[in-house]
Amino acid sequence: MTEETQQEGEAGTAEAGLQTPETVSAGEDQPQTDSAVADPVLLSPPSASPQSGFGRIYIFGVAAAVLGILAGIAFADFALRPAAHTSSRDLGSVAFSADGLKGHLILNWDKQPAYRLVVEPGDPARHEEFSIAVGNPPRPLSVLFQLRDSAGYVLCFKSVLVKFDPRRAAAIAATASGPQAGAVASGIGSADQAELAGLEARELERERGQDLFQLDAGPDGQASSIAAQGAIPCSGRAYEEASSWSFSPDFPALDEQADWLKRAEVLRAVAGASAAQTSAAQASFARLRAARKKALEEPTPYALEGDDELVGFDPSRGIVKTSTGETFIVVKAAAPDNAARWQDLPATIHFKCNLNAVCALTRRGADALYARLKR
Image (cartoon, rainbow, N blue to C red; front, side, top):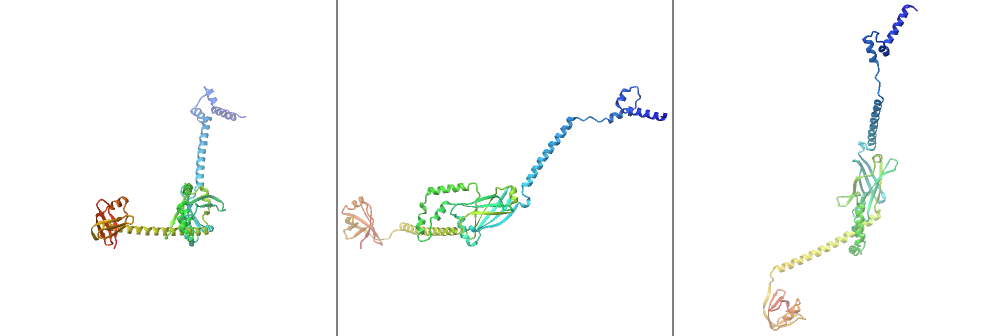
């Protein structure tokens, strides 16, 4: 090895020694420079605390969990809430031929699924039968409708009631066609009141908390359709998946509706005749009362008035005789004590007679007698 190479190796060894902290601290007599002291201190990495690293990991884990929960809630809300474009859905009309009915269902979303259902007669010729069936049903009626998915499976359902009046139904049921209708109708008032009261209580319980149909009257005053609206006990997913609907009305069959209409018409006829008779009787009584009032208010024209002597009175026959030969027939019987006073003879009497020869006879100590002057 040459001398030059040996010097380079020694210089390298000395420089390496200057970069080691232990060498610097141990050699106090060795010459030092500013760079040789400062550089090792700046290049030494700070020691990390294990406890500080665990805290950061814990915070990151909690934040991730919170974000996951919020994301799950947002996803569930998005998945279960109907889209804005399905806030109102018209599922169209469906016919139920057995009862001659047709229904139309519209769905909408207002914080929860809701519906509007309209039911009407499928055949306009059955308008009167439908009107009497929903206006005065023969028994408690209802309509059950179901929402179905594309495969036809029922997703959810709802029942809507028709208001029922037990007393009105009993009155119509008591009628019959034919000449006996009046006699049957006259016995309607003798129905068992306790049974009717029980039916009314059960009907109130049936209607409690339920949706009821409202009657939509046509130009003729009869019910042309019935309608109801309210909430449906369906989930948001069921609302979204509903693609069709069906309904099962608990209504009278067509022939029963026709028979019920005939009975109602009989009851109306009987009620109309009774009302006419009552009106005629009331009018006759009013005329009689007016005539009596007029007779009392107007002075009675007397055709004959004078005094005479009473010579005979037969209370059993109602005959009064005077000394001048006049005979009076009593038209209003006298009370027994008054008749006894009129038999006290002889006595002076005073009489007043109208144009119809009806007279009022008076005497001292007795009540007046009303008698007709015999001609």
